[in-house]
Structure formats: structure tokens, C-alpha cells
Length: 437
Image (cartoon, rainbow, N blue to C red; front, side, top):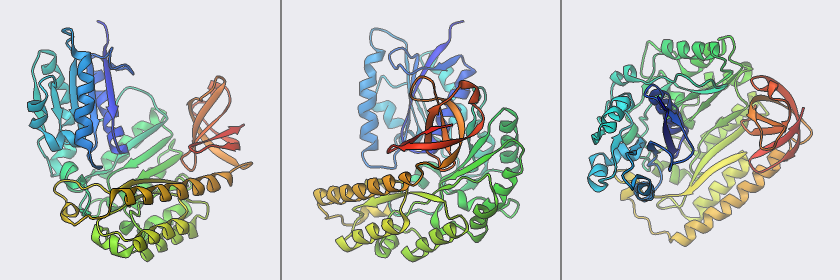
């Protein structure tokens, strides 16, 4: 029997990347293998994100473009998953007669059965919101492809309800996976050759806080670090208000813990932070940055900034620029505020001209490019431990991530794949390093 080809486009966050990996694993049981060609695919799936404005329109446009591959009587399945699927639901099927499947954020376990139906010509939408512990028992696992680095979901959803954010409405409230299930998954991954795990959730720092029977996130990290074969641990995303003393201490005495942390500030203005409902102040954020660097001076930070939030004045924006100068992120995800339907911020007056918002974003990005260049240049002629994960950009190169999460390409034999090696950094690019053994 010939393999069926599966083409997936993944939008947005690492949570969606993880979901796409699960989809590939589940559909492999039905004979589907990944392809990079939508034209050749027997099934196309868009795994969508609705965090930023215009997400729905972008998905509709992309689906319209993909429709061409279904012409001439080709029996190709087209599906939409992720947050836009959860948000739009049946409307997608009603508006797009060539769309076959709509799968919500809590319904991945139903996908194989839905695909079997689609192969028989059935159209179906499943967007049931399961906002309780039931969804832990429906959690799809990843099988098959051997990898050296793997995501491990520790919690899902969010209880913070930041005024601009749609995540609680499309991903649900916070729910922590059972620590026994997490540790069993990590042990199995280690036995399968995985050397790095990335603990994943919308707000990993709040892991276990709603349950007396589960450990804190810091204790979970310590238990993961005890598993033989796991040589590096990362986690994302951290909410600054939930960074505990116990978690800060982990960076001092767990050698497997990565030297990079993602800590979204969103703004440097107390007034804007309050309006966003972030639950911390500028000073408390900077205090946690200082305390983290106090226990691990070489720690690097990445973050998120929203520009042009309703009510942001020039002074508020200058406070954000000042915060960036204090923190000096190695990388920053920044974008102009866009209202999301159903959120509190969507009701706020937003009279700042778009041209001014874009000018502020451009200024912020110019500053960040300078910070990235200056920070990366400090690594020139220093050694970095790299987990070699595959071939590099050029023939004769291999590639992997250093301790700070950046890609390092260097000349080396494929036999190095799967090992940790020391590499001297000889050149810094905007998004990667060039090194030599």
C-alpha cells in the first residue's frame, strides 16, 4: 500500500508546533507521511493561531489559495485545526464548501476518526470545549520519529485573562498534567534517545498551583533533571508574576537547565501593564530579572513586547525602551497591538494613529537589532556546548543548539549527531552562530 502524503502549515506558538508533531504521529497510523509539497499532498492541514489580529482573515485567504490543489477531481482532504478552528467552528465549513475538516484545540484525539470519515467523503467539525480534567485522559502522545529534542506538555490553558489575550477563550483554563505521566513520558523519551526536553505550557510557572497532590514547577524540573539521559532542560512560556524563589534557585544548582529564559514583559509602563492586567509592575519585573542574573550571571533573556496598546503615550513607550535597555534581550518578539474579539482590551478606546504605532515598532526593532548584535558578539572566540541535531546549512556542516538556544553551524562529521560537543564561536549572524570544533 502506497503512503499517503500529509502537508501541515503551522502558525504561531510552540504549543502549535507541538500539536503539529502530535498530528503527524497520530496520522502515521493511517498511513500518512509528511511532505513539503501541498500540491502533492493527499491531505493539507492548517494548524492555526489567533493571538494576533487578522488571523481569521489570513486563514481564509490561505485556504482560498490552497483550493487550487483540489481541482480537477483530486480527492484531497483540506483541514483546519488550532485556535482559529476553535474560534470559528462550523462557520468555516459553512463558508468554504471545499473544506473537509475543522478540529478544535481540545479535540485532537478525534482526528484519526475524522480523517477516516473524510476519506469516505464526509465533512465534519469538532470543537467541543473540554475545560476540566477529562482532557488530560484524551491527551495524544507522540510516537515514531526519533528526535534528540522534544516538547513535553506539562500544562495547558491560562487563568490570567490578560485584557488583550484570547488564549483562555480558545485554549481553556489552566490544567496541569499529572506529574507521574510527565515523568513517565520523559523517561520513555530518554530511553528513545532524546537528550533535551522543553517543558511546555501557556504559563508553566503556575504548574501544580491548583492541586495539592502535584509538585511545584520548580520541583517538577528537579525531578526531570534526575532522569538519566536528559542532559538539557528548557521551558516556555513563563509568566513573570509566577517566577518563584524556588524556581530562581533552580538556575543556580541544576546544570541541565538551559542558560536562556523566555520572560515576556509586554510593556515597560506601569500604567499600561495595569491596563493589560499583567499582575506585576515594571520594578517587580526588573527585580526578577536581576535576581535570576544574580544566581546565573550568564543567563540570557528573550521576551515579548506589544507596541501601541490602547492608551499608550509617548512616555509609556519610552518606559518600554528604557526597560529594554535594562534587560537587554538577546531576542524579542514584538508587534503592534491588535484587538481580539471578546477581550476586555477590545472595548478600550484606541485613537493612536497606525503610522505612529508603526514608527514606534520600527524604533523598538532597531534597538533590538543592536542589542542582539552586541550580545551575540560577546560569544566570539568563546566555547559553547552544542547538542548536534542534524546537518548544517552547507555541505560538510552539522548543526545544533547551544546552551542559550541559538543555532550553531560548524564543520563536522554526521557521526557527531546526537552528542554534545564544545564548539568555538567564530562568527555571529542575526539568528545563528558559525563555529568550529
